[in-house]
Image (cartoon, rainbow, N blue to C red; front, side):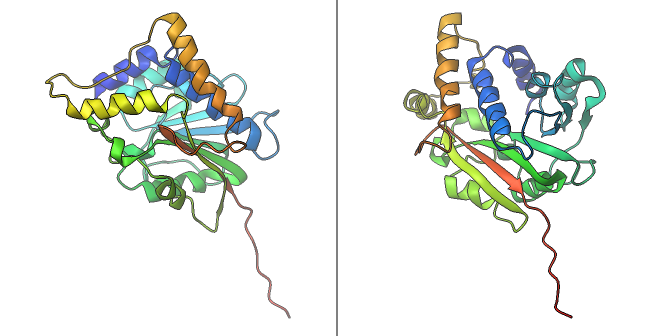
Length: 255
């Protein structure tokens, strides 16, 4: 992304309702699905950690490592997390040992990367057996708008397209669902309307609403955390997957 977008992200990610709610959803899924339970100190890696907001929220409870390709974003993240953040890029430029993490996060990252298949493979490689990837992406290519182009998105995802990224003998998909369902109608309307607008101004919506509105929007989106995987959410502005790495299977031949 452009440097100006990372400036916006650093300014609002702690307080903007969308980022707050996404963090609540992601960490609720980690607690629910991580192998061995979440009441222990986890080794957590975020690929494409941006300016570091997701990891800051859990950096005291867990051992965290961030990987980010943008030097501009990396500077912001290192102000918060120090040398726990390193430069690297998906799919091949991640210099971390295989099978060294309990959790790998890909929060709205894969749409920025041309080779998303090999990027998913990299995330799985970093996991210990029974570890999990939690990945989020924007949904529906028909919603691709000037905002997606401005953020350098290669694509938005259909559900089956997203599912195919995780179809591997080494992985088991524990959950794959739409989310941000309650707010989908107005958000989709805004995206579609933006396609019809002709303006020289770059599209953007990273502004924190008034406090009460911000709280209500965050609550509405975050309320879906306990519904995911328990109640069907047939549509939504985003998709989320929880994928577990299988234990290696050794085949023995009879003597």
